[in-house]
Image (cartoon, rainbow, N blue to C red):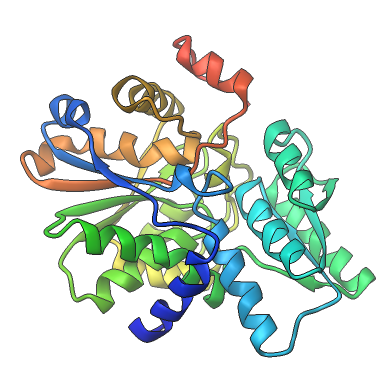
Length: 322
């Protein structure tokens, strides 16, 4: 999707706002799993999630091409919306973000604080996306998709940081929402000519990408009811699916209980907060720990944006219901 030179240019754009996020090897995680676990802490960005990288590069590409629109609109469960709001506001562009009813209150508050006009509409992300497309037509705004080459290139800067920092990784576990994070990882791995396996992780309650990976074509589901809202996709798009099928070893499905347990483990073993999608890669590694015993493995802690009430429920030993 891009070259190393293009990735370097994207890194310069990102670095103006987002410092290199840390990659730490946590000894308690190693003791727990029998694997040398390296955590890429994308929970330490200015929005608490990796997505901010993509929005910055997307809008910079528009600016350099002289194609900045009067306004933009997008759909999200939260982290992509924060990214678009941050970048749009910095470029003086009006930004509308559509979220489904019942979306995270704290993510909603963050998007408003970053400058977005927030609209709650639709039962889930895919319905919100259709509504956002209608708003784009009605207002003459540009629709910002969750998956776009410039967004993937920006997001991929986290993958380069990780793979450059930790040599000889046997495997990286990456959450799969709409596909930008894992496609960025696959592209950078291939550009660096590494043999590192890449494993996608989805929620059992939102298995569309796993079903599509196995079938070889997009498979939609009727719902995606997971508390890991960053992975709540029920309508995979063909382009990210093709890249994932070409470059990932497999896609794992982890349960709501496994995701909640991984959030608790991150807190107890590292004192970091992880949202559901951020904890899912660790859940996947724990499931497959015997496969990589004694080797180096990485997990992408893609975000920390979990509402306080939900976090309290998880830390109390319960699994949230949605």
